[in-house]
Image (cartoon, rainbow over all chains, first blue to last red; front, side):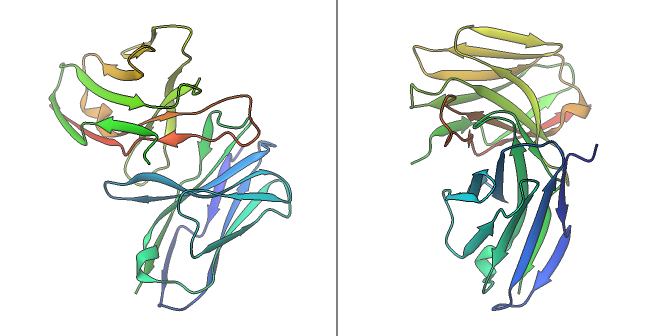
Length: 112
Length: 114
């Protein structure tokens, strides 16, 4: 039972490049979330999904897009990376809305 | 507007001492209050959680105290150990809504000196 798996673990991007972060969960959870973690700012919600094919904006959605084509996968896209998007990104999933969240191991992204 | 406010930002405690982290919230509709523990290089993991129908919940050395009227809750770590050194996040959410989500505090970095 892998839980929540994020790919990749590390990435360096140049300003303006695009990339997609992949999150996969094997717990059959309906709810999935993308957070970014920055020093002193805690965990800030970027986008979340309440089920396959549905997404919603969180606190800091600008510059990001998401898709949930399959229940087990939640993709986070950066169309044109900016240095302000340098952060550690965490994916999480939960069985019920607002319930216990199971986190992946994180993706450390650096935009230069 | 920050839904959950957490303090202190950092905390240094001697081994064997008591670590106390406090959180406050505004939304009285919140009905689930978890604490997460995060070690360096890892994702946060649920440590302990409480619902507002009880004032205290204890699991081993970890205790949540909950004050509904003051809209505050706190984490107490008794007999703190160096292995407890981590970042702790409080959170809150409202159940019963398909749009429910966790609102996190900004975190407390705990260091326990041996």
